[in-house]
Amino acid sequence: MKNAIFAGIVLSILMMSAVLVFGQEPDEPRDPVGDMDQCTVILKETAKPNHWVIEINLKNDEPLFGMTFPLMISSTAGNLSYDSTSFAGTRIENFAVKIPYEDTLFTNSGKGLKLNIGLIGSIGPVAYVLDPGEGTIARHYISGTKGVTTEAITVDSTFIGPSNTLRTTMLDSRTSVYPDFEFKRGK
Image (cartoon, rainbow, N blue to C red; front, side, top):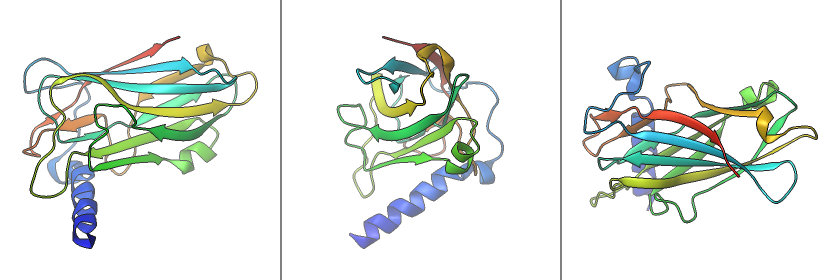
């Protein structure tokens, strides 16, 4: 068990820091396999006032093994707080490694939230991948101070150090896909 955990940590560090070894990330979406993949983030109000869910959806046409989804969430009308992340009922619910991360230094600056999710399909001899398809990857839950509205909140992809950008990786760990990004406000 300890070996599996250690192997997972090492694999996570290697995958997340591959940019330092292999060069800079592209400035634009790029998909060397098939059609352009699409990451769509939808901001929805919850039943509780001043609480929202940010739904991260991915449409992919190739099997994927690892993923990072760094987001910057900002508001023009007040402060935001990160509450939690859920993977229940999502396409990656059975992934071995699902790590949500809040950049608290950025959050404490009062500029908004930076949230990242690192995902690895499996650790061990049997590889689990995300099959081609479309659907929800994760849900971030956030809240805001009085006066924050859905229209005042914006979500965008971002860079979170040391090397996290919106990126997915195939099982060979050499082929990366940089999906197109779209933000929507939903009901």
